[in-house]
Image (cartoon, rainbow, N blue to C red; front, side, top):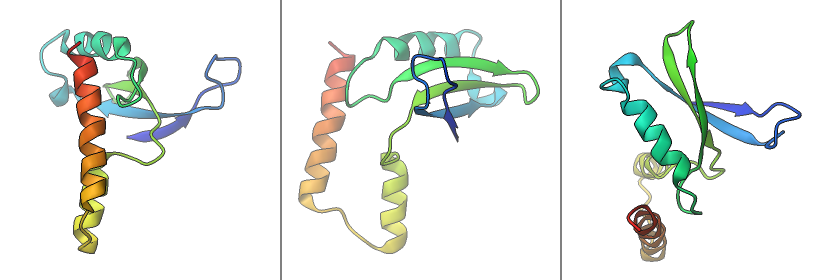
Length: 110
């Protein structure tokens, strides 16, 4: 995963984006990535990271998905960091995470 800035002149100019690279082994069957991309671009919700586009990188032979930048990172990284530091989440933090996940999930299934 890489961090990028959008070029000037683009509607999202100077915003940060995340570039998620998917190797051939991660792509699955032909069309799976395009189907997933089509679904992700339709999901507009504050608790779902936005998908802004994708492109094929010929040099490294990977598909690169352009995602909205989440300034606080992802939940998996936060869990790993807390585990390494031996810090537990408070009940309030856990409840907040659950509410956010469930709101996003509810939107996906509506």
